[in-house]
Length: 368
Ligand SMILES: [Zn+2]
Ligand SMILES: [Zn+2]
Image (cartoon, helix red, strand yellow):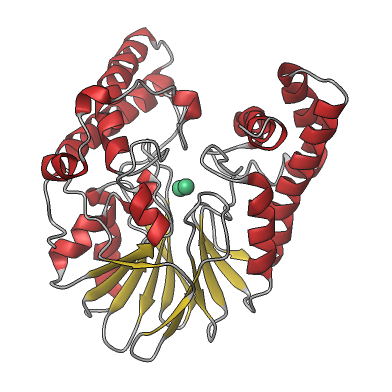
């Protein structure tokens, strides 16, 4: 099976018509930046050493968000975890990889199906022959499922349908901006959005070639790489990449250094999945977004989910409306979580807490 189909070929194969695409509410999307956010279109990643031959490619804030990547060098080649939102971003990481090793990339692992973690797969597939793309069985299914959520081939069509409108709005805001600094930021974001649209139109979705349905150990030429399926969390197919010798784990978006994105998630199971993750022996986590973290960040992040669920349940039992909860629960949890959950220009506490509360209300209280 070729992994280098055109987008149209894949769409034809999975039977998705562009006409059937609904409009997206930007507030329901992962990782939407304010129109005038301070972003960068160069130096997209910084490669940071985490252990011998193990690196985190930490993404800089770009108008269309990129995930972090992990780079694992083996005696024979390179394994890359997650491939970002677009080919140009994957190319930027690939260039950095070539700065530390001239070995070919042999494997890509996608932690989950969200758009910002897999849309650059094609770059690695094109760079070296026989690249294996590994993910969980469920993530592979989600990549072609029309109703999966914020990622996959149908989501590329959704983005193509909504981006021109977003670009028109940015143009409008550029015209209306009076502050020169704001205007310059809007112009930069407009250029990035236009470039992203061009890339998206030419995307050759490269789907996983190998799936796993339970935890496996890969022996990769001097490197033991364990792929753990610990239960549902940020999505129903989250994969954790664990290096037992180096004591490093790659978490995808199941643990991040921003506020979590719950729309495609399972809040109560997420807590249990993170309890299972905690049982692994590691010191450092390469997160889906944000800087490399030490293990104690896991308890903090899980604590937020636990407290959020408890607070929403209590507010619902006390008869609060959703609007009352958004204010009340947001303020109630702020002293513990607001500062540490607002370190970056993206995914800050106040940007996301309302939507988090709504998601927990819908998924846990209403169970819909
Ligand atoms: Zn992400
Ligand atoms: Zn995600």
